[in-house]
Amino acid sequence: MIQRIRFIFLPFGELVINLAALCKPRQYKIKGRKEMKVTLKTKLTLSYILLAVFLIGSFFCVSNYLLISKFQNYIINTQEKRNENLVNLVRNQYGEDGTLPNMAILENIGNTALSQGVILMVSDENEKELFCMSTLNSSLCDNMIESMKSHMQRVYPNFNGEYVQKSYDIMQNDKKVATVTLGYYGPFYYNEEDVRFLTVLNQFLIIVAVLFFIIAIILGFFMANRIARPIKKVIDKTKQIEIGNYADRITEVSRTEEIIQLIHSVNTLAQTLEKQQMLKKRMARDYAHEFRTPLAALQSNLEAMIDGIWEPTKERLDSCRTEILRLTRMIADIDKLVEIESEGFALSKTTFCMSETVEEILLNFQQSAQEKNIQIETNFNQFNVKADKDKIIQVIINLLTNAIKYTNYGGKISIAVGMKEQNAFLSIEDTGIGISKEHVPNIFEHLYRADQSRNRDTGGSGIGLSVVKAIVTAHGGEISVSSVLGRGSKFTIILPIESDYSE
Picture (tube, rainbow, N blue to C red):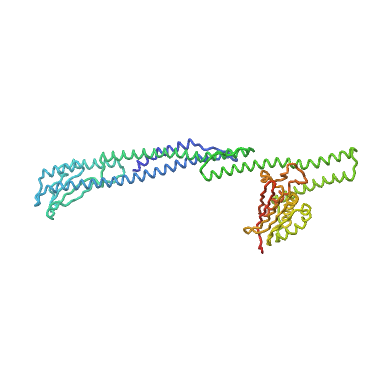
């Protein structure tokens, strides 16, 4: 059996080695030494092949073991039936009164038994030998046993067989009249037909095993390619992202959840980087524009006064001073934004009442609201939060300033402060001009203004909302906006409560 298993696994092993040789790993030289890298497709393919070898080998071992075990039992049972038939032949030769059979007939039965590989011996009730085929033809019997032994050792080199004898009593009228002893090579013996049958059966199992192995290799290549192909697409896309090409998206379709998530993450990354690249370009353009306008005005005014075209009057000097102050405020806002967004930015947190803070701020906006006849509605709940009060005040002031600035005459502003799922929320809703849908996702970006006309009387510097978001994010909170063009906007801030609160 060991030789048969070895015969099965040798071609499998050679096939695996050849496949491994075809799937040569790549060599990478890192820091003066070569590192062997194996592709995912190669690993998956080899995994399928090794799994197929293991399963097919296990199947062959188990089936071969069960086959040999069952066939041996079958041979032993067949030998037992053959023995019973020979004993019955001898029994039928005894008369009902126990008279001895004819010796010529016993010799015929002995020759029949010898043709079946069995040596017949008969003795009477006193164990006195009546007939012995070995005595009659000892050389023929010895040659038969030796032939059977050499045959079994040739088929199974490690087979442990020997000559055995088995005795059967012949009874007549409940009385023992003789004993039949049968000698044969045991515990079992395979004749040429049995060996041929096992050989054909093993060849069939080998063909089935090789067939399944080939199918497993084909499926392995197919599944490995199916899994590796979208990953290869992801790798190619990340290389494109690496060189700054963010436009393309991965369109590969997969039914594997992890690969779907990977493709989605890479596409989202490309989209985000593309958006950031566009924002950086626009931010650089906006910064240049914001600084160029007042600087151009300063340059023209100063050159005109230096050339004597204009007299350096107080009004003209005040105009230059106004532009310089505008530039100073813009730079201060940028410095403030950089400070808030820096990793080393620290908050000075204290415990204070959110609603009381909003009420105090509203007092400073009463005149501005009255000038535009704006109605302010409030809905406040009393509770404490732990946050940087000065920064939160700056957030509220920026949002209220925008709300009043963009709300038309006779409009309304609604302010709510309350609790939501153990978080503090502040919402400021106005009935102003609103923001178009395409501008909403970008209003918190640096220098971004929905007013493309860049009128500073309405648009500001475009930094205020960036500062607001940076402060809220620094507190671990979130800010969101919903707006409808021509109907108004609603800004909602959610902050985690870090201290006990009371209603």
